[in-house]
Each structure stands twice: as structure tokens, then as C-alpha cells.
Length: 187
Image 1 (spheres, rainbow, N blue to C red):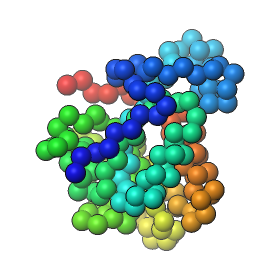
Image 2 (image 1 turned 90 degrees about the vertical axis):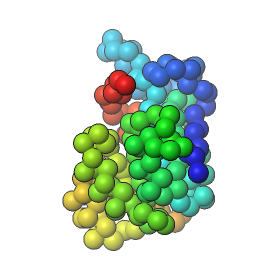
Image 3 (image 1 turned 120 degrees about the vertical axis):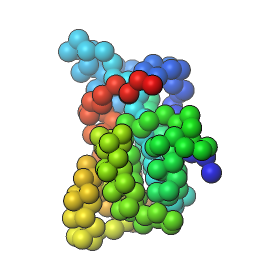
């Protein structure tokens, strides 16, 4: 199965360039206005890998991330095994773009999120990629284990649709608007 690649609002024309236009007066343009005011270049689009086996949660996450004018690319795989193939650019994922951020569910078939996180953080080529755990679990054990495995943060998916959208929006607001990522490795 190949990753589904979705670009928010408008296509990204090349790495670091986007064809988006955002009104500087809109709420979604605050990071852009701040960058321009400080003399910095506008932030580049963020590559996100969503590792999620529930098609409904994939759709909800896509919709919540697409709400607004930010240009980011969302790639989706359905389990930890596929995620590692994608991250290592193996097989069908040979031309995959390295993500800046990983949204990782814990409870998935074949390889769950715990094992996936452990393997990502053991790999010198991948360990610097921030991993946000986004799961239905609210178990204190899962929270503790995720942080022990070096998760960047742990967020529980609410059952309520409105609350779920708010959680994903908070991820978007912080990880896609405020956080600065290093330039992707060359080669």
C-alpha cells in the first residue's frame, strides 16, 4: 500500500516553496505576519506523516488540518510497519519525502505505535523527527511509556467530534505554526 499524499489548500510547487496565498489579515496568517515583521523568511511547508489505521480518524485529522490557509503536506500510512518503510524509503516508498513531524497512533495492527516509536527513536537517521502520540488511550501507563520512548508529546483522541477537531487544531497551531524545523537533510 502506498502513502496517500495530501497537500493542504493548494499544491506545493517545490520543497520550501508553496503556491498558497494567505491574507495577512486572517487569523491563520499570524505566523506569516510574525515572520515578515521579524525580517525572517516565511516558514516553509511542513511535511507530516500520519500513522493511523482508522479511516474515520484519518478523514477527521485531514479535515481539521486542512481547515485554514497554511500549506502543509500530509502523508498517511496505516500501521507501524508501513511507517518504517516510508521513513526508511523502502519499497513503494523509495521516493518518500522525509517528514518534519509524525502523528502516531498507538493501537494498530501488524506493528503498534509503541514498537514503531521505539524503532524510530533508536534509529540515528530518524530519532530527531518529533513524534506526537495521537491515540484513543488515556492510560497512565501508555503516557509514561511513550515519554520513556522519547515521544515529543502525548495527546488522547476524544470521542466527541468537536473535541477531536480541537485536539487536532491544537497540534496544528503549535507543531505547524509555531515550531521551527531544520532544513531537510540533503541527499
